[in-house]
Image (cartoon, rainbow, N blue to C red):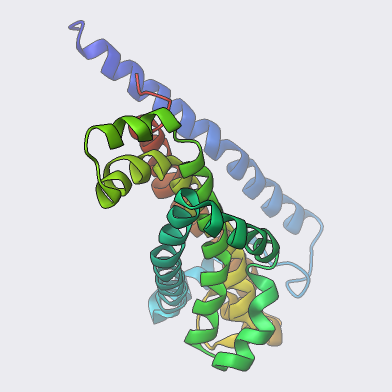
Length: 268
């Protein structure tokens, strides 16, 4: 074994150990679930067996309904988040460079940040009806205020000396934003996106139970009417697994790499 290969193997062993450690609680939960349902002979109308949920998943894969509901949910989150980012980041930047803008908008952001998400569902259905528009609006509200406020905080943490140095080197307004303020605020922006998407995902499931005919939330709600507990639990598993995959495979690495690249933490 060469000396250069040893760090690679050590990294692989550490990664495998981390995966096993993360998966172990879920494996134990599945075993406990199957054992309790079988041992106590729980009625399927109260709680389904693991095998019943697996069969429901197989049926959903065969008829394509799982792909339909999951795709609809992800599309709504993507569109609502994209619209929120296009508006929230410029607002946060403007607040960071202008005291007057910050003094006006900061109280509003603090007020609406606690209302973001589920609280907007009733009025969203009144404004946009039951469908795509209402849910995208709810997602937008769940992400917009968090990202805007985090962008403001990110700009505020950039040292004044750094701004003055850039200005003394001839940086104009847009160059200052593009080369100093935006990179400096990026770690906070990415953290805000991760936090906002967590709020948005919960708001999405609640909104889909009320305001649409597709999506994971609607799948849960519809299954309740037919006492299909195996589909309800399957939907719950999909909701949790989808968010876990988004957070661990996309958002967490993005946040970590952004902090290492632009923040005060540097990668080894």
